[in-house]
Length: 437
Image (tube, rainbow, N blue to C red; front, side, top):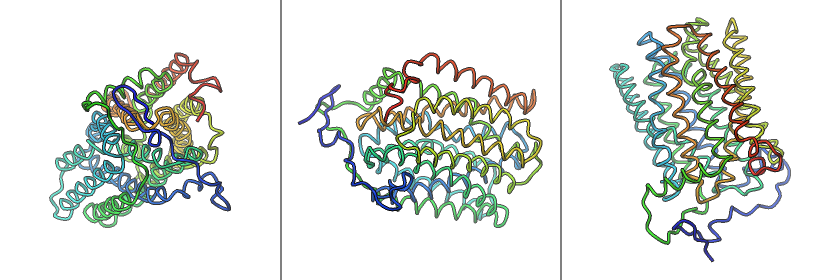
């Protein structure tokens, strides 16, 4: 039996989510560990973890290199922004995942990461590195890297039984959160000890190992069987129309764009400036600041995973976003790295409590047919990050660091409250679909 919708059909067996497994026993009964009963997840978790280590090592190494080489916060924000060019392609990559399989797309992306890292390794070892090749490689990587999180989330949804989905999303998020701790410290340490070339040799190995492990990830292919041949653009428009016609998803997309515009610029681009110009510490100190934010995010992901089906995604998403802005507003007034790092831990914790439930809500409501495209549109919202970073550099030069970030936080709080009010009927009631999963 098949169900036809909008020119495409999906067999009943394909459309259904993976069936629940037998109840886990012993240590696997812990919500955080229960997803590891699924064989596919046991390969995907280390694959995502190694890839995330590579990402975070690159972020710390190249952010510090650009700031030192150019001496300009404007160039730093331009470099951070160029890494998110791929957000414009994210819906197309998500659509490709729906068509050919999320694992296949993810494998291709991770091969590209390894090749680009090997390119910078060659420049570094040969002594010919300059800001120009760094910008070029960052731009090429940015075309696809922004979609990695979307593809890994869609792959988790494709392979995980519904009764462990929220726990799996929380556990999956710990790969990027823990990698920011280990990767940032390891990247800063290797860069300071061995230089950029050898640090990039390690990054290349991480990406290659991540690719090989991703090859072992498996699950039932959630590919549509089409009644008629439709174009890629029609698929893309179907995904955009789905988000527009689903109030809870539309509200989440606006919030995702907002936090990327006004919250993430501080922790995803400006921390090298904070370390060098505000706290007067070196690249190792920068790694510590990044690790502080990541520690809080890791704890938040674990809390969401342990809460599992007790979590009310839409409510938690909104409340935690407001707390996140409050913590960032306090952070900018902290006088030193110790107090600043403490506030970054709290900000990271609130960030995970907002972003993980958002992903759960979007993936649960989208179902197999729209999963990749919806997460692609979600990644498109990351384009708010370069839009927030570019003016931040100029504003910091003109009015100072504290006034600039305080203004961003104020805008974020007011806009979050406006989103909560506009879609209150879909986000706040306990029985609303956005609060059930």
